[in-house]
Amino acid sequence: MELLRVAVPNKGSLSEAAAKMLREAGYRQRNDPKELVLVDEENAVEFYYLRPRDIAVYVGEGTLDIGVTGRDMLLDSGAEAVEVLALGFGATRFRFAAPAGQGLAIADLDGKRIATSYPGLVRAFLEREGLTARLIHLDGAVESSIRLGVADVIADVVETGSTLRAAGLELFGGPILESEAILIQRAGRAAPAGLDQLVRRLQGVITASTYLMVDYNVPLDKLDAACAITPGIDSPTVSPLANKDWVAVRALIPKPDAQRVMDELWQAGAEGILVTTIHACRL
Image 1 (cartoon, rainbow, N blue to C red):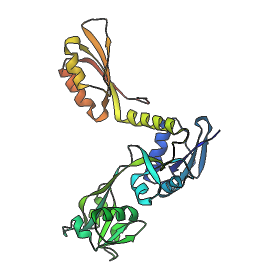
Image 2 (image 1 turned 180 degrees about the horizontal axis):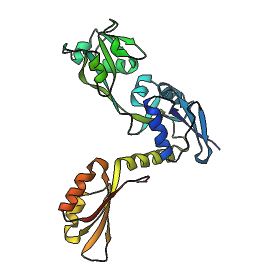
Image 3 (image 1 turned 180 degrees about the vertical axis):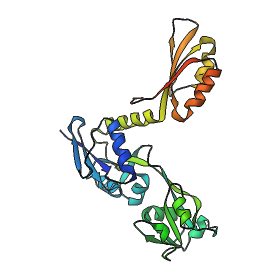
Image 4 (image 1 turned 90 degrees about the horizontal axis):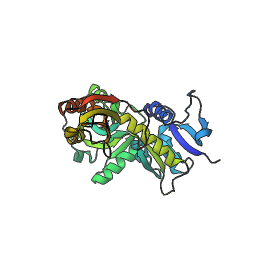
């Protein structure tokens, strides 16, 4: 039996979330962080636990079939791999920063020294903008490079920006890239056996984490107004009740909208409004 070979981050911010999503999708995951390979025979998958930055290279070379990594790491690597599915976690923004008060713009990068852990990503951005700069490749803590005289500007992953402010830096220009965890496969290669099933399962996990199920009863003469509030993915499910003047409605709603939707349904005349979580689904 041929196994689908999947690369998973072995550590870092993506590791725990990736393992959690795969478990929720029905796949075995390692319990020992020192374990490098895990075979899930029931699902015909073999998991390899690798450095997140190396995953795109292994997949791009065809050594492994698919992998979970960050969009920023894929683009920085220059590997022959493509994004298959955005996974909805590990969201980050990639930004430029300089000493506070300089008021720089993107055009001011021309001729500057830019410290970054993502030289491939920054180089591609500069080429698109028609700018020339000297890139200083550092493995981490790039915010110290300006104070130490190594660089004029930094380009780095930004979450809250507090680390940059503490170093006396401020952001300028728009995001170079909006990144998140993604599933990738080798470019130009047909989908390997087992990939479709894995993608469907992961999509089900994403949907289950993004939506809630709402059930309610509503008078027939107020059904249209209620359904406008809860249109669902395709359309709501409407079922008859013993009282022929009423119907039961079921629909998916975005999780952040739950309280607002319940308020609007109540004002529209709905009763018995219940909101429940979803553990798994196929749409």
